[in-house]
Length: 105
Image (cartoon, rainbow, N blue to C red):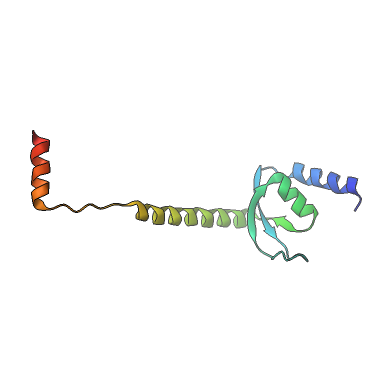
């Protein structure tokens, strides 16, 4: 492919993509790329990957499933991090009484 045609194809593909961020699904490539890997990329990166036959745009269903799985993973990680931050302090009954008495005064 001639260089001008290459960049013309990338620009045309980029203009055809409506969203600024899209989900792509990779193809198997000779340099070790694995098929079926979903990634959220910019419109420009997606256009380049499509023109180079390295990926395709994900369908709406695939994209929504991918985003939902990312949302669930993020939520699970945030919950695990929150568990690590919880601090518990044990105090004796005597100390509790003293705290209550000082709070009442």
